[in-house]
Image (cartoon, rainbow, N blue to C red; front, side, top):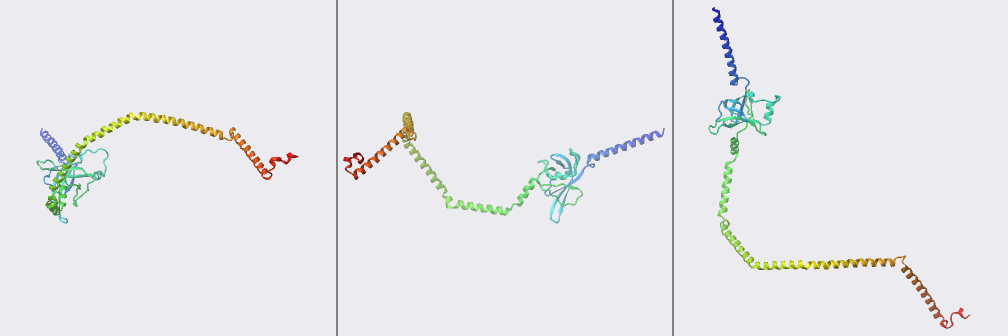
Length: 321
């Protein structure tokens, strides 16, 4: 009978120990002590508004939280480095595909950077925003730390402030002063003072010219109407006269075509008369030969009468015998 209470007590103790161990394990998992990785980030500007426990978000999705913030003085360069330590939970990102060993390096090469951003304009609280900024420089601080250092980029306000710091205010003020002096000299010059009067004169000249144009248009309007009426009448006359003239020209062209055809026929006839095989040319050649023979006979008679004039009375010697 006495051993049963002890057995129950021992069983209850073991069950309680198991519950405590399980609770502790769940607490460790929930608090981030299991599977989370620590990273550090170095910022050049102020981290006012960034508190421990602030979220670390990847495009708005929380993947970690800030665990520590400290300031480091670089005595060599006399620069302040705001070092932010954060816990990064890889389990918050679901990876699809094979996990590469150089996945982190590839993400950084594509422009993944950390940047401070505002949680609320009313409270002024900050958080760490991770996003891709292609083409941005990988800038790491020279810090001895066992944790991975995530590259950061300045905020838009910090870049604007940096740009304003680079501006030479004294030189800008000197240029503005010189510009104001030049404007004063221009305004005080005699030409500028006379500009209103010259402008008034020019405007008056424009008004006078406009009045002259109106007067000329008024006087030349009737003449222009007469010219237009004359031109219209001329066009009407031309419209009436052109058809008969065209008909006359067309008839003359027809007659000219007929004359050309007759002339071509005449040329054809002449070609027929002058061809080598034509009868007319044959008769003409024979007549020329007879005329040549007659001419030769007359020449022979003339020589005979010149040498023997009495031959005309006596006749040829052969005739008397």
